Length: 303
Image (tube, rainbow, N blue to C red; front, side, top):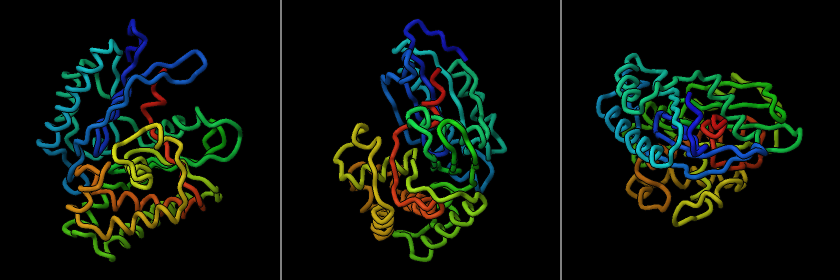
């Protein structure tokens, strides 16, 4: 990894199943982050990969186009660049079809991180900014996997990457349902509960949530017309509010959901499964409160 850009800016690209994210930031002497920009592009790299085991050519091309735009922006900032990929690529039998042209485009190799490392980095992105020694629970809902981590301060006690995600469960349990059926949503909830049951945890009043499902949940509950990071990051909601949002979204068609501010088409088609996973996680953790955090593993990779 090259972290020696003259500007001090670092660009970290997180290539997930549904999005290609890029954080441009630098770490201050006190350990806090100075953020220049945090960009998101929905590319659905992992479209169908849980079913077929392969990355589709069209999905690869969409993601390469996003990476090209990210690279150009990082270059304008004078930022040193690194990139990681997660479950969408981990699942694929043909990762080289994406990783080789992507590395050539970025001028740097893409590191495919394990589920365990993904969980640890997600936790660290929150733990770095939470003072004290109170119990901490961190949830990162992705397109194909969901990481749940429990710890105290910077110390991790339990971390697991669960093979459930907003895209994965939409494709397997809600395909062709518009709006999602009651039985379909119940099946997503059941799958999430069964996955989390593999990770027994002591109850904790608050769950800190990361990634697009959670930040979209916050934006919708805040009724934002346009996304505002400053209002989303740190916003808190009750489990009842989140469950009510799940039910409201499940009662809408896709066409109705995409007309909602802060709910683009690339998120609207998988949001019901994502929020159902979120509610199941809150139940599993015994959490009455969701704390929404606009950050993620890319924040932990800024040195």
